[in-house]
Image (cartoon, rainbow, N blue to C red):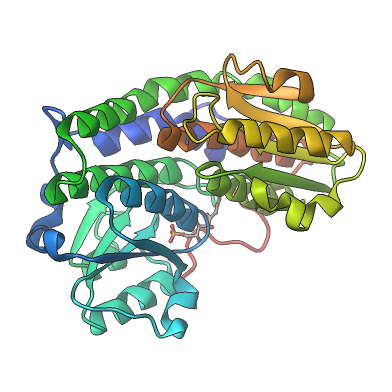
Length: 368
Ligand code: F6R
C-alpha cells in the first residue's frame, strides 16, 4: 500500500500536490468559487457576524491560517480556539456566529464535543473534514470535504494543506457573498490557489538536501522555529512535527516575540528554522525577520531558513537556505510547511524511529 515509499508519511508528503488539486476540483468555475456543499448554511452567510474556528493540533494551525485569510478577504472577525478549551470559556455564541470545525478524521472527541456545544448554543456549524460520513461532518449544518485521500501516518501532512485550501475557498466564497473583495482580486487569489500544486512539486525536490541536513543533526537536543504573520502557524507546525516524530524538544515562536524572552534560549550551535516572508511583502516583514536572523546569528544560532527562491538578503546570514517558489503572502504557508515536514520525518528516520507510528500517539483521538 506504501507503493514503493519507505513510509506512509513519505508517501503522503509526496501526495500533497494532488491533495490540494483534488480539494479544489469542481469548486472553481469561471474564476468563482462554487460550493454547493454549503447546503442550508448558504442562506445564512450574509447574516454571520463572527466566526470561531475550533480544532486540535495540526488542524488548529490550519485554522490560524484560515483566520488571516477570512479576516482579510471577508472582513469578518475570526477567532481560533483549541476545541478542548472552547467549551470551558463560556463562549459568546449567537445564531449569527459560525463555528467552523476542522478535523482530518472527523472523529476527534474534543472537537466533536465542541461542535455539539456550539449546536446547543444555537450557533451555525460548518465542518472541514477529510473523512466521508465522519461523525463531526454529520453533526454539522454543512461540510466542506478535503479530498486529500486517506491519511494513514499518525502525523498529519497532506490533510493540513488540503484544510488550508478548503478554508481559503470558503474565505473567497464568503468575500464574494458579502461583497468585500472585487471579483478581480477573488480571481487572482483563485489563480494563486490553483498554482499551488505545481509549486508543491518543486518544493518536494528539496527533499534530498533536507535528508542530508537531518542526517547530520540526529543528536540535536532542541530545535526552535520562528515565523511571523502566516509564517507563525508554519513555525508551530514545524515544531509539532519534530516533537511527535523525532521526540526532540521543539518550540515555535512568533519572530517578533523573540526579544520578549525566548532569545535567552539562543546559545552557540542552537539550530533555528526561520520561515522568512517574501521580500515582496508589502508590510516589510521580510526586513524585520532578516534582522531577527542577524540578532540570533550574532549569538551563535545555526540558521536554517525557508525563504523565497532568489531572496539574496537572507543568504549572508543563513547556514542553509531552503528555497520555495514565489507565491502571494497568504499562500506561502502551503509551500513553506513542506520542508519542515520532511525535516521531521528525516530526523526521525536518522534516529531509527518509526515515523508512521510515533510512540504514545494514535491517529484519531476518540477520548476527551
Ligand atoms: C499532528 C496530528 C494531530 C492532529 C489532531 C487533530 O500531526 O496529527 O495534532 O492534527 O489530533 O486530529 P483531527 O484533524 O483528526 O481532528
